[in-house]
Length: 419
Image (cartoon, rainbow, N blue to C red; front, side, top):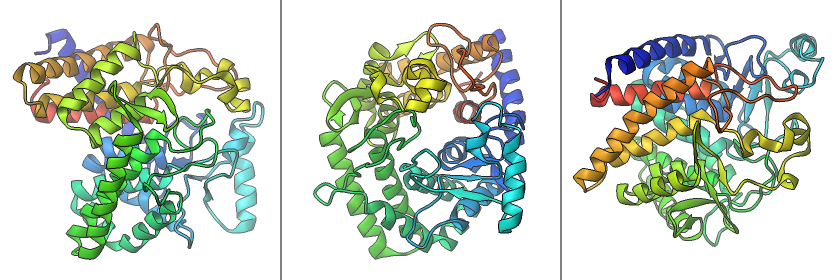
């Protein structure tokens, strides 16, 4: 049960957050990471941000926004199946250079008027960054959209051939011996300030889940042979992730040959691949090793400074952006794991424990947002405030955080827990 003060806080915050989320959908374009014209990510669609926001919130309440956003991503699919990890209407590189922000839009308009185009797709390995998680997270978003609405089913049916081409492109990254993806480029996933290669925990967990989504979609569309193939492939990937990327202590590793704890991989692995009993072991490990006063740290131990991309060592002192600071969307995503345990664990006492913790977590993060003055992109690990960074302006109302909060609120409300 929530106290009257906690109820008031949560209910007022969700009204504000849903109002802000509405501004992130730009009709005629799609769902953008920020609604503020002066923010770094304005007039951009990032595949991974779209996927997270769609799965948590928009697929359930604004399907037309998801349909338009995904249609834009697939409009720029290359013949070989590759998808863009970003589509922009302002040059991202210029926006990040001190003193040149104001030129980002004007330069884009000038150049693209000459080229007769209104958007610029950015693919893997270009524009000073990678995005090898793009296909798995986009296909997971399609799967969430497919399961949640009639519009999603129609989209999957109309784009099924394109979905297959995307899977085929990503499959070329995998090791035939175990079907796990081998990453060869830097800046491969959401923690893109860190140089990592090889078989990464997070990307392979998303690869498994996207195969499961493809199997579900193929079955619904009566594509029986394709469904069998995707299901078999999913089972192989799932089995080998648990064999090579899951640590006996109860967490998912950042890389096959690097035993450090990867919090995001552990959260999504617990959601997608583990039963409730094993997910509870993961929660115990996360609480013991990465829980801080303002949320969950991303890695334990942190990466060495030499593994931080050079530009981020300059922009963000000591490369602390992904390595040290707390990302509230991660903390919110972890509440889904606690809800899963509270619903599926065979022990009554454990179910009640995690229900209580899940409710306490949303109250605590609501208080943090109130104290910090917003649902920030990142927080200082020891106090509820955004850190100071050089040059980079931290979004005060970050879409990943907003969508994570709204998704958890919606889930708890449907369960009758917010009373």
